[in-house]
Image (cartoon, rainbow over all chains, first blue to last red; front, side):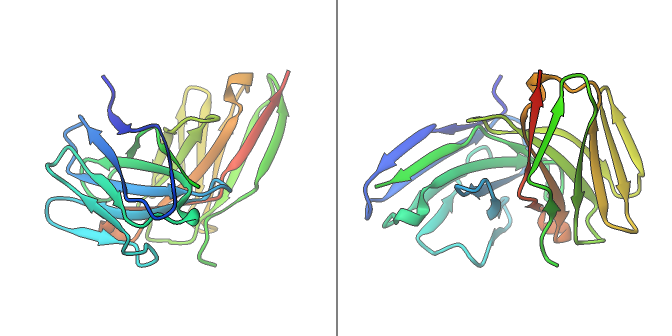
Length: 112
Length: 112
């Protein structure tokens, strides 16, 4: 009965690689998000997306791209990984924009 | 300023009350949230308060909102060792965009 799930939980990879993190929600929500939590635990919005609009935080490099195959999924693709991309990435969803957000368990990405 | 501010650490004894404070920035934020993050875990929605409310109580949790001062607090009554975690305050800034802006988190340590 998991509400928001992410895979993988841990991801270790080399600089320069391309990787994806998957997110699925079974709450019937219309809007999904990606957040980045750095080593100091600071959380920052990366994207918010519903079937009408993708809103990108202007500070996110274009190496990051969200892909949504359907309303229940929002995957995060990262190209040309850099050391600074090491962080925990959280997916979240809400019924609509500005509604309460529910978070997944996070994916810890380590770039070597 | 632009940031949501929280003190970084709080230490209490088991059985005492804990009060975690937060200062937010956007007076138009409609909802304010408290999330809990246990070590190595995701973000758990604890409670939230609508901006037209002054107080909300949910079992051991009491949220107080002072809109004039843009001050939010979370009181945990009868704090237990299982309450040890990082507590994040968040405001729903940007109106319909739905982006959550988080504070840096308060690490609560509960001593037996």
